[in-house]
Length: 130
Image 1 (cartoon, rainbow, N blue to C red):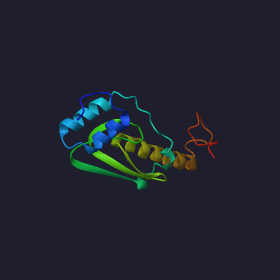
Image 2 (image 1 turned 30 degrees about the vertical axis):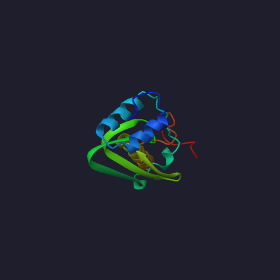
Image 3 (image 1 turned 90 degrees about the vertical axis):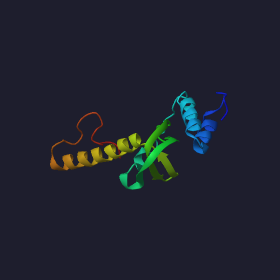
Image 4 (image 1 turned 120 degrees about the vertical axis):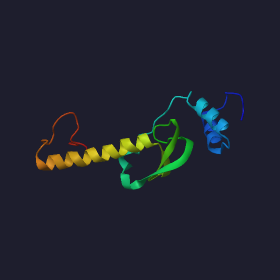
């Protein structure tokens, strides 16, 4: 592991992927946390629970979440199949995407039942989205 901190974000990500010891992984994670995340939410429309496979490991993983662009150390990792290929996202992003899907289903069910009138408030009903 290079002692210098003059590595780019991509180089540190590669070091994180190829780290053999926890010391290397922890050092890469610490240095990656210094970079500002650049989140990618453009694929959120494809965020369906059927396209994601969460996996729990018995050991701690270090990886970069594709969606929120933050370095994560967790026992959970989620594999997301998108139109642009398979992506690795964190458990927090997985929860956000699945909750978003559930909210859309509940909203349409409540509109059909007449609980929420169509066109009601702040763009939350999906009116004008089509």
